Length: 407
Image (cartoon, rainbow, N blue to C red; front, side, top):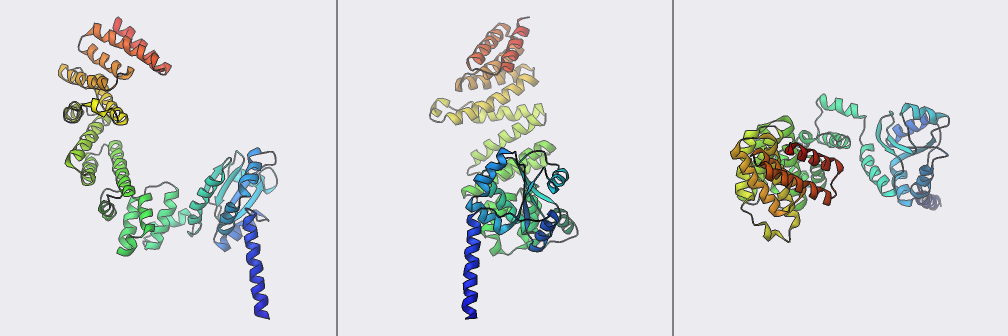
């Protein structure tokens, strides 16, 4: 009999729990201090919604989002949910403490008052659930961000800790390249091949060398992994430019060579990367040597008429040419170099005549002393800009340049 009663009670509790989920988020009551204590004891994050009685989007959240069955299922199972009026009693103190200035504002907070994520304004169901998915993982990680940082600095390096630490730092959008390498070296070959490890790598890897990058390269023919490798290469190219680090540039070019399917594909990308690096780090002579090789080898010989069904490819090359020719127009006066840039920009005009490439052509010819033709081209660039409905600032720039040329 006792067993039957116990079974019956379990069924009732299960039905009650399901009913709670179907009703949306169930809000806890009591003081905020009691909520903090509950979060600590249950090792969960607090989801606190700060609202006002006059706030339209707050009411919309109640009606459309917080009452949603899926939202209730996720939030009731994973968080301590707490709702408070920001203009009354303890709510005013929380608004001041967390420096809130708009409604609704909701936050994911741990039991030590640390804000893990703040959400301002109306959030539709999908976006709130996306935030909850991130915070579910964070809620399982013990200790504040400072505690985890201190543990790492004091030498903690076990795999489970590193996994959690990477997840926390990822939420803060910090670079985890070194940590992912550490984690990867700690786990077994079997663990290295799991989906959870791959997901961690895809979300956090950033280094061009090491076992993680070698692992990615071993699977480079898979679409998602190829895109990740390209992302790491681009990320490090930007870093090389920002740091003016030619050693890192060399590593970038080597990595791209490993990724590329053919030597020609690798060499074209690498040459353009060097050209852009020298441009952005203000090394004009190195830029020109590289740009001239790039144009002669990969651009000027192309028959762009055969690209009629690939307009996006033509536009990509057009932008490359204009960028290089513009740099020459702005930085060089030597006749031979300017004449080379004239050949480049003519190829751009062959692809598609626009105000921007006609303007660059005009500037180059003016530098060469062909004043009359340069004026005619600048006038044409101005007319094209108006036809293209270009921004007023650009039309004004062309107008002023035309007046200067006519003096």
